[in-house]
Length: 236
Image 1 (cartoon, rainbow, N blue to C red):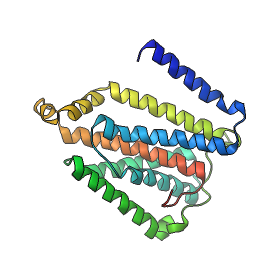
Image 2: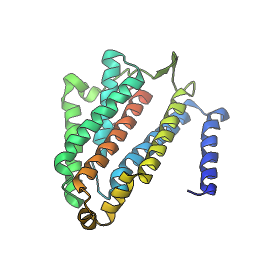
Image 3: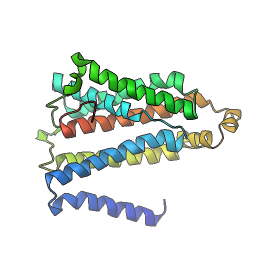
Image 4: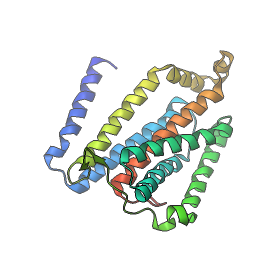
């Protein structure tokens, strides 16, 4: 990234920070906050598809796991958002790691079909496990995040800035991964798996690591969505 690109990104960040001062309605703030969340979700999927070159069609399942983990902890225990978000990240990353153990030996169409099937399984569980997920009624009255005793809502720009901060942090994380040994290894695996294997790179290990990081990031996005909306169900 050259100096010109850095200036462009800095100007864009300043513009986003100043945007609520224009007098955005609550509806527009919610829409822009959703754009931030979906951008983060795309960044998480890019770890699998962009860096690793694998196709995942069940990424929404991990988004849902993060949302339900954070939402359930908030609804039943009244925990603070930061704690429930971390729990959602850990739970989603753990399930992503378990899922990757048998599946990261596959690639292409086979991996796409298995991830799509996993997504459908999670959706069926959400709808039918009523004692936990409340079925089609979904989770309601999820607490808004609080910071230093201040409730973060769209009416006070709190959720807007919270989603923006998470987006910036996730962009920085992706840049760090891209420039790290992990990023270089994933690009090598994507370009030529056979050559990478012959060079001593353990393909399945790095694929599982990338998949776990990607799903954990998706879980973070789900937790943000749950607390932004205050309600989640299988459709959302």
